[in-house]
Length: 463
Image 1 (cartoon, rainbow, N blue to C red):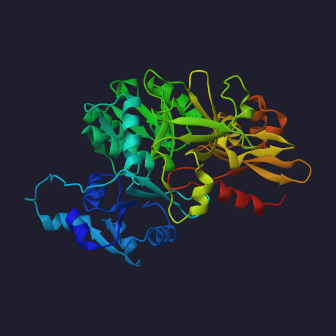
Image 2 (tube, one colour):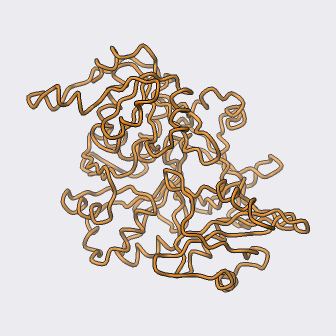
Image 3 (spheres, rainbow, N blue to C red):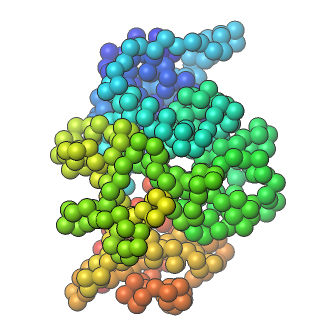
């Protein structure tokens, strides 16, 4: 495959439009072996976003397979069809080919990974060989992983969490990975049992679905070393439901595309529910206030004084592709990356992420963190999804409003939910002024709530 790619294009980058599986893994390393940069394409994106990635990255060749390859017919790219190559090779083709990797420098670009585009068109994140190596090595050391561990690969490999945790790390360890191209709760537990898997990495919604299986119980995960949760914040109700069902906590972590995966995460023996764990090795963090001044790392300060999380380390991206202004805004001259997230450290060095800076709701000068409100709503037994936003108000600047979706077969009423928030201890100005009950919240391809879509809907609602 590496030879095919080297001959197929003289461009420096090659796209991958493939599901999670060995095909993606083979195409990933074949692209690097061909001396090219990998451009993973999120196959859940729409045609507009896909066309943008192709044009922005400058690729003219994409490795794909049916049925995903059908989406590329109308686009100006050549398709290298993995299924056709496998059929042409025949049953006698060698199962394993030793790759001869080209000489690379640490600062050479290995992956151009596009963000999910929750606030607009996807941005290309430039990740070097040094970035990937630094995060892989630090994550392995942090979690005390070794070659004997067996990984479940169920997350999309076009996403930084899936790529780091279920492709790069196991490959570095020469460990076993069992890939599942399609998630199902029963299938996940079945794979754990059949293959004696010990490291599970999934998103909260997957764990929530597994916790709802009636026939499941502690024996199903008794031999698992770590159940890691990433990709999106872990709601408290999912953590509680999973722990009650299986007697094991989920290990929440935190990372961004710009950090090529986890920058902090909980691990067995170093775990605090509600936190995203200690920082991985060779990483620095500081918290910055609205005035640009660094806040003291004081675990006794109130949550309202949380600062924007700034991270520094060798895994931080080189910059945004074709976006010099955005790169200059995100990366400081001394090497810190401004995450846009709010948080703090506790006295033991555990990181807590409390929300997004841009999502803060300012009510008469007071700051309301949406995640706190969402967590209160999610404690209602009939609520499946919740999102809190700010709505402009002539007298208070903004007021809190919420969108919620009920669990299947259940109903909720706005007044009931407002009363529930009051019972959960929210102060009056944090209680949603209005609650909109919807069938489902709009989600990005990686499962994050698209608040910009909700904001557009809110703008269309009468005030």
